Length: 449
Ligand code: UDP
Image 1 (tube, protein in one colour):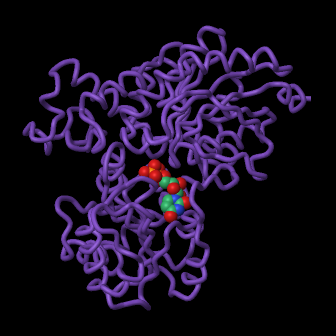
Image 2 (cartoon, protein in one colour):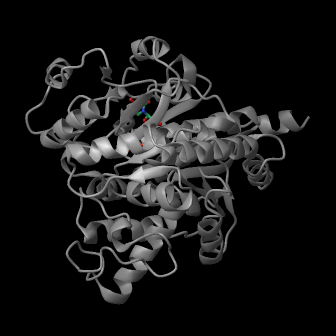
Image 3 (cartoon, protein in one colour):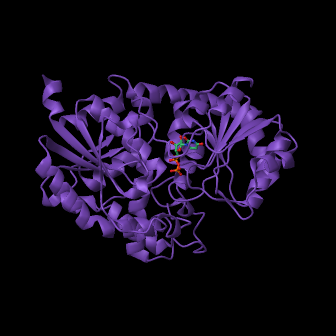
């Protein structure tokens, strides 16, 4: 009976156009679908998410806009998202109007990625329930608020690189330093703050759901509850709560699993820098030489187009490293499967929030080399709060790479991190089981619909 009632209710989801945002949104879609809701995904042409067989149970609709496809690459994420929002305020309202007119089912709520903030205006106009979904950590959400507050108080002085306070701790945000605030390498501080002002604006939102877990970020969640004064539901890690269809935008190379099958337990370091990080050729080479001298086996994801400067082919890189048998390179890996593999002993990561949760969920300690935005805060938490990671800072040199890899893969220190990571894994597993904190939180949220 309850199932039948819910079946007649539809949830409209609006993901942001990036791999790390689409994946958790589709996991949320799956979780809500399993609870009996019909799902509509409203996306722009920038999502490239095809309603394949795996996703055929969801309805997909397109938010019309006229931006050139090249804007996504040319403008950088910050300016692009602001431009996209300006373009979609009106067209999304029209689309929602059509959905409401044609729809036999009632729309229970519209859930939008925090960066697709233009949705709020239309939802308010139609007096629908409006829910913000944060696919980054609760701490990143807090940091965005803090950046806006600092900007309002002192302008840009403290936030700009070279402002002299980079190494100082931000008051009441331990262990976040000024340099760990989520400024972007793709945008000016002004542009980041302009974007964050919109994403931090709760407007008429009835609640916020976050892909995180209470036990990881209790103080940041409390901070948000007080600041926003609406319910905040930590419902993650969603990838552990539901088995969702693959939403990978690139083809996963499964051959690396066969290669891992041939390696000894905990003997391989997995290296992946996410879906949009760029690295300099020089840095790639320093990593390569450092890995060789560490004597460890490695599986390395080198995404096409991710190296700035002269592109190196995988073959060339392996040749330079003179160790074709110890390393394996792919363009894109089935990451969750890789991290779950017993041969993987550590993860060298840019610390995107999904990668962080996926690694914690498998009890794999990390070498943290954040590139931009929220990755910096995630790296700090991994090293200083959860103590399951080592951050490599500053100019990357082969000696530092070798040292970090050995600390994690060989030394007693690494063993301790592994033990802590395994204990966190159990906590995360428990949180998504019946009566677990995230499980209950999702149920509480659904009751409000
Ligand atoms: N990923 C993957 N294969 C790869 C590299 C990454 O499937 O070879 C997935 C990874 O599992 C994660 C997502 O891409 O779910 C990256 O998201 P994250 O938030 O970690 O970083 P972003 O790409 O947003 O910087």
